[in-house]
Length: 296
Image (cartoon, rainbow, N blue to C red; front, side):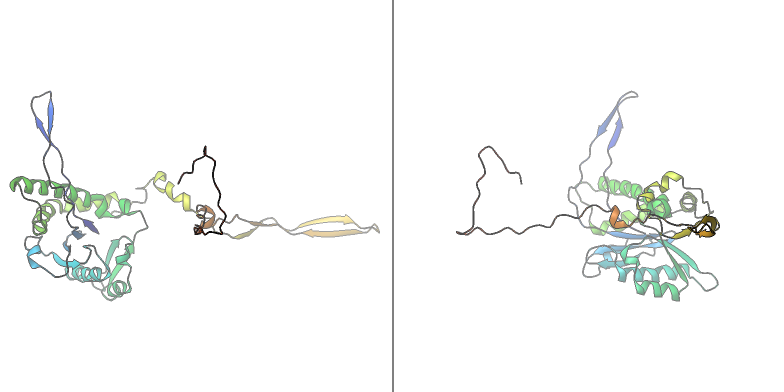
């Protein structure tokens, strides 16, 4: 699981008396800066991705112990960096044929590559991709780890600004701040609680209620199938024109379920934009009355 490190400033509350409280504001840098991505896995040293063209080892000097240094053009993870992280993950977990490892991740495009699947197959790693928009309920890192980590990271970044007045947080300080926050959050208690909340370990199928599955009913399409009635053939007797009795057999009707396709549920297509015609001397011109207005 990866997350972008963005420090958020929290207000300071000073107690003037027992009955009244005063909020004191604090100045902070208004610059957006550059994005730094950190890849996390429980009890595996993280990886940090800086937006650079060339590697700069000084950026990872004070990072958490065992951090995997990586760079990319945008500062985000891609397919090549994910394969490198898989090698980093395998070196610490050490999966074997007798003891395989299950890796739970979201369906980000960087995780869906042939190189990653082949590497996991050769090194006894089973990839389990979560459904879209379900990481907030099924991913243990999102549920019990990234939330506290971002909160503690904001506190550590705020503390660094207090200890260094007049200075802005630079890339070389991100590793030090992340290490202080990571050491405070990464513990066994949070990992166990995250797995229990998502119902992964111990297995709890009733951890989600019917309200959690309600949004999926919007895109639910029943499968079309032909079902025959369970009743047996019906025999009906009737008389023909000559008065002789004739036996007729009525077969059961075939019931077809209504077919619903995504195209029927999608909104109507947009109108095709017409090209504007150039006015020429021979083109007819139309004039609007003075009391009308055209809105663009």
